[in-house]
Each structure stands twice: as structure tokens, then as C-alpha cells.
Image (spheres, rainbow, N blue to C red):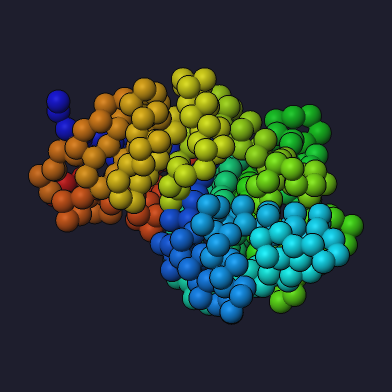
Length: 373
């Protein structure tokens, strides 16, 4: 079986990015934050355990044995809501669970402090999203809690909408999130980049009446950030923004001729995987391209080999058109695409730089990747 051609893939990608009629989006996981110097999920959990003290550290370690961080936060919030009096669950009273929730959120905020980050990769990514001249708005989806994308977009003075309206305590506007620019009476212009934070953010907080608001800064110590309540039994009033945003993700994936770039995502979330895989199966003219930092995750590989419009590209191999094979070594290095005998766009920093270079300085012009010398 012939190996995949690196130059052909890069040239094809450039051509796809230049097609103004396509609906283009990107889905970012924790690897994007890691490329900017912030911890990924495992690193975040390790930092939290390191910061917690005494019994709290041991309880948290036990809770994480069979759950991820979001599931632990959901459990703590259920204990705080349902346990009363001297009763305990997992060694926690209602008050202790609420305190541990606040402490964990405070440690998440501290671990995701942008003062520790290198913003350059996200600046390049934001530059591409803001300057891309598509007929429909670019949609950016992320499961990360940090403020990297917002900060980068605001630094370059990009116009964007994240589902909230207001300045001091922005409120979530379901009707605006559900609108499409082409609909009659649509209020958010197509020129605005859409930013959808599927699992919440360090600057989202619940008010006393259970409404989520977006602050202009990370939540302060003593408050619990509004991070995705993954437990399906969690109070419906506190799930509303997340349900609406996940539905937006589903609907975006099913738009005609969608090109969705996936970076930094490990394919460890079965629910999100199903949304991605279902769209690839049902929308044959759409394309989903997963850029993998290291090996191709088994869940992704299994589906990509059966679904030609779901591609997976990694440093040493790729699944393109349902065919899994290695990369054919080009005669010369391709700057930013192939270096040190490896395909490099699985690194979010390299991908964002590539996207920034591909952005149209003039309508109708899209530069191809640098050819071999």
C-alpha cells in the first residue's frame, strides 16, 4: 500500500481553506492549551491534588479514581445539594462538599493563569479565524476552561460572540446562540467569529438564582466556576447553557459542506465522539480532519477507516480516504508541515501558524504551502 503524500495533503488543505462557500469551524481540546504552556486534563488534575491539603487531597484522589475532573465536580455539587444534616457521602457532608468544590475551582483558576502561558499559538489561531473571509461565520468550539482564545481575539481586536450579552455580568442568550446569520431577523452579524465554550469557563459563575453569568475576569476565591455538570441528573436549570451549546455543536457539524478542524482533542469523551462521528457519517460532503499530536487514538482510527470524510493525521501516519498508511518522506523539508522526518501539524502551535499563513490577505487569493526547494 502506497504511503500518503505530505505535499498533496497540505495543498489540498490549503485549497479547502480557500473555499469561501464552505462552513468552516474548529474544535479544540486540551492539547491546544498545552501548546500554549497550560496544563492538559491530566496535568490539571495533578496540580489540583498537589495544591489540596490533608483530608481534602485524599478524598479528591479517591473521587478521581473512576471519574474525570468534570464528573468529580458534578458529584461534589450533587452531594452539596442532596445531603443534609450529619449525613455524609464519600466522606463529605454537604458543607464539606461545597467547600471542596470551591477549593478545586480556585485551584483550576490558578493553574490556568494566563501569566504562565505563551499566547503566540493562540494569537495565530485567532488571526486566522478573524481574517478568514467565508460567507458564513467561523465557529470555534472548545472544551477548555481557560481564557486563551478570548484573550487572543481581543488582543487583535476581532469581533466575536460567545453566547453572552453584557459587560459587568453578561447573561447567556439562548435565542442568539440558536440563530443562523442567514435567518430573517438575525441579530449577530456573520462577520462575528462564534466562540462556543462547551464545558464552561473559569470566568463563568452561578448567581444565587442559579443563572450562569460571564464575568470580565476569572472567578474569585470562594466562588465555584460554572464548569460542565456532566451528571445527567444534575439540576436542569444549571445545565441550560451547556445543553444549548452542545446542540449548537451538533447543528454546526450537520451544516452542508462543513470543514471541521480538530486539534488537541484525545477522543476520550464518548458523547462528543458520537456527535463528530455521526456528522461524518451522515454528511458525506462535509469533512472532519483530526490533527493528532502523537498516535491516532483507537476510537478515532476505527471510525476513520470506515468513514472517508473523517481524516486523522499524525506525525508518522495518517488515515485519509479510509486508508491507513505512513507518510512518504518528501524530497525536501516542507517548512512548518514536515520537519525531522515527521508531519508537524498535529502540534497546535504548528497548525495555528499554518492557518495564519493561509489566511487570505485579499479576497480570492489563498497561498499554497511552501513547496520543496
